[in-house]
Image 1 (tube, helix red, strand yellow):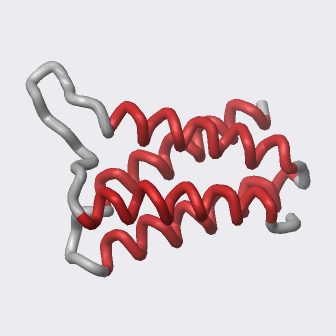
Image 2: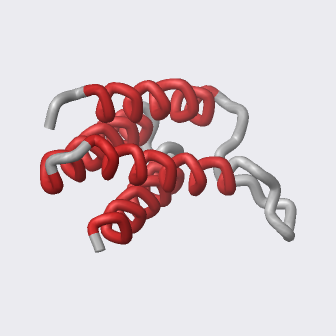
Length: 103
């Protein structure tokens, strides 16, 4: 059950980060990155294991990678502009920092 909760939190955080990163620049990317860091860290804090943080981070990565690809209608949620590149770089950095931080 803890794994399922970790997957759900990671996917929800990833979806929120993808949708929020283009909102009200520069506030949106900052909120998306901080939300990613805090939520992945909180999963490990709640369950007390780094494994759950890794599971949540993997589900975040899956949502991000799906949003970075073209959809059936040609839509692209994470573009190659400044905010998309910032989310890519700093989002992955936030995931690594959240996993490494002690619970």
